Amino acid sequence: MKSIKPLSLIFIIISLLGYIFLYYGIDRTEFFSLIISVFILGLIYFYWLKNKSLTVKMILVIGVLFRVVLLFDTPNFSDDFYRFAWDGKLQTQGINPYLQTPTQLVAENTDFKVEETHDLYLNLNSKEYFTVYPPVNQSFFALAELASNGSIYQTVIWMKVIILLFEIGLFYILFLILKRLKLPETLSQIYFLNPLVIIELTGNVHFEGVMLFFLMLGLLMVLRNKIWLTGIALGLAVSVKLIPLLILPLFLPLLGWKKSTKLYVALGITFILTLLPFITTELIDNFSQSVNLYFQTFEFNASVYYLLKEISYITIGYKSSLLGMLIPLFVFCFEMYLVIKLYKESKVGEVPFKLFIQKAAVLLFIYYMLATTVHPWYVINLVVLSVFLNSRVYLLWSLTVFLSYFAYSSYILNFAPDQDFHQYNWYYFIIALEYLALVFFVIFERRKSNQNLKINL
Image (cartoon, rainbow, N blue to C red; front, top):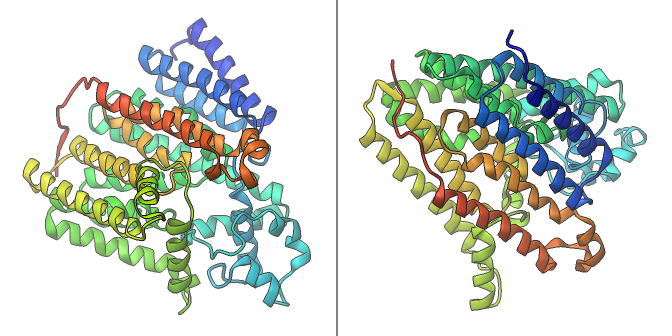
């Protein structure tokens, strides 16, 4: 095994201490400490990307080490894990998590073991909303709860272990795809050593890593011309997080109607099978209600949407309801444009893998630029696609997106009216910095190669 250079060893130690300090030494209210720590971790990350001094084994060991040190505490930058634990606890008590909001459940269900969930309930951030997490995700919540013996702390640790195991699996899948494409396997470090990925997945217990495991497994099966398995893998991905639904139409020009139909049928059957344990007449209505409320009510780290909303207030005095219709319509039209463009740029029966990845990344990027809510961990979906692209734009965004944590800073707690970051002008200034930097990266990035990677099916 290739030995680690002294400078790389020093950077590994600094990064390790940085993750420990970031996770155990500060919380999300300490904005400048957070940003400085991320900046240092980011500099080291880009050093490794530029110098290519690490082997695949080194990348795996270092990446796992950085994640393992974050296993032993509950997240300090996100409280979503309380809802994960809540949904898991409901299932272990035989209660369908899709049928009632936490508030309804506590008020109406006399059989519910309130004494076991009192502290959990108090910490929930969306007590009045039905759960928005798909069925496979729910299964992992229940599995962690069963393994924890009722302890919230242990439930979180088990969820972290699940995410870590899937991330190791994802690393191996990326390795196989890169090998098949005859690309350097060390490009896997783009994902596996990324600070945002490490902090938000194993650290803050977000299941994007599990979803990406199934998504990339599906892409690997595409390259191997195993369409039914592709559909099954993508169905499981959608059953963890819904975002892969956005890129499904892009398979049509790449696979043709016959193979695409197989893929969609396999995906649909897989998703329905995962949904069966939870299926009721109220499920679809409750789930769609929460999804709609999420997009209409929650606003966080938006860009174009904030501008359009402000224009609406200036011109007509209130937020136009048209925004809720025009933005999805634009995303749909843009996706149809990409599908047509792919039909023109590719041949059926031949998968220009890099072209597909480029279009998928652009589609997700446009979607996030127009979205009402862009949590930092959403950008991880662009980071994993960057493994196969020459672009560094999304990697830079994976660092600047931490500026959005200003919404939870002590400045908001101390100076914002009602502690509402939307009523504090400095919040918009910080978000503007994030997106102005991103626009700058997009405009001035120099692409090194435009060659399409084509794989014969």
